[in-house]
Amino acid sequence: MLLRLAINVIRKDWFEHKKLILFITGGMFLPMISGVQTDLGRGMVAGILMGASYSYGHFCFYAERQRGTLQLLLSLPVRPMDLALAKYASLYSMALFTANVPGVFLRDLRLLFILNAFVVFLATASMAGTVISEKPWAPMIPFWFVLIFVMPIQNVLKKYYPNGVGVYAFLGAHIVTIAAIAVILAVVLVYVSSLHFKSRCAQ
Amino acid sequence: MQTIQTVRLTKRFDKVFQLGPLDLRLAPGEILGVMGPNGAGKTTLLRLLWGLIRPDSGEIYVLGMQPYAHPVNVRLHAGYLSENPQLYSALTGKEFLRFIGEFYDCWDNLRIESLLKQFDVDPDRKIETLSKGNRIKLALISAVGHRPNLLLLDEPTAGLDPLMRLDILDFLRQISREEQTSIILSSHISDDLDQIADSVLMLATGKVVEYASASSLIHKFGQQRMEKIFVTAISNQRHP
Image (cartoon, rainbow over all chains, first blue to last red; front, side):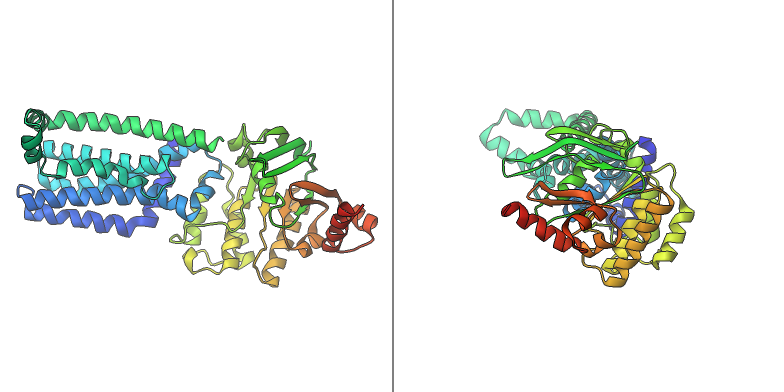
């Protein structure tokens, strides 16, 4: 039943947003051509995946709420929690398509796994914000945390907290483990936000 | 068995507004018109019956089930059209109906095709290009594609031209008579209720002003039009 619902929601969302998905995914080919070994290439990949995570989270859930179609979905014979889970499935179909279709040209499974974990976690966090809160800035919350990693953090740490440089280096050395933890966290976020949505709908 | 039965149904919103207590009964094939000014509680009543909100006290049975406890089961056998329904403007009518149809096991594609022809709605056009009337017709088609036993309609004819209104009212009368579909129709436009309602519930600020069969209301007040009956009933309440 949930699978049938998810397939239906995924098909509808793809019909609706196919141009956006193809545009963003097309953009991902640019850094693949220019090479992800350069700073420019890595920056482009990170930027496009961040944009994709935000956009897909926004269009999968926040836009439904804003234009009133979430009310239409909630008036159909479907449990709110199942609906939220189906929407997450739709989000992942888009996010993983964008990360993996160009990503296969990397021929680097380790990097591809890290990219997948990055996009899954960010997209989940972005959509979880909109599932839990009706505030328009809710999907932006996870990006404030991403900024921490984008900032020249090593320089800041060296200046204000020299012991932290070691921690930063440790995290960098265990990036695959961190990626795996991010995926687990994403699953927890999906469950918690869907439960919250269910309890709010029941009020 | 009654399609709908409510017993002392009450819903409050922060001490500002209270709907009820309401004791309603709706038989199979009956059309109940709900009328009242803005803020009378018409939409709240429909949302309670659809299980979108929980009552504060009293009981509701829709098709023998409590809608807030078993919303999925109720909705599989009933249809709902909200006021100003929002549809997916980027989809075509066909894509939209296919999406909605996947939620129901007994979706009737032949009926959908015949209704699209009957209402003269082009299913291959994007919803954003359809007129308001055609969007409402499309939403109505999506609400009846699974042959529901009950149809809840919140101001379905608001803002429509007279011809479209008549199309919709004719269709509602047809399914209530031929398929024994019970219908609750909330409307500002008392003309709609004059034409098709078997019984009428009149609400003002959440309280029942009158609730009886259309014929008995006409007999009691000596007026043919529900609008005039409503005005008389309200003034009788204020100046007994």
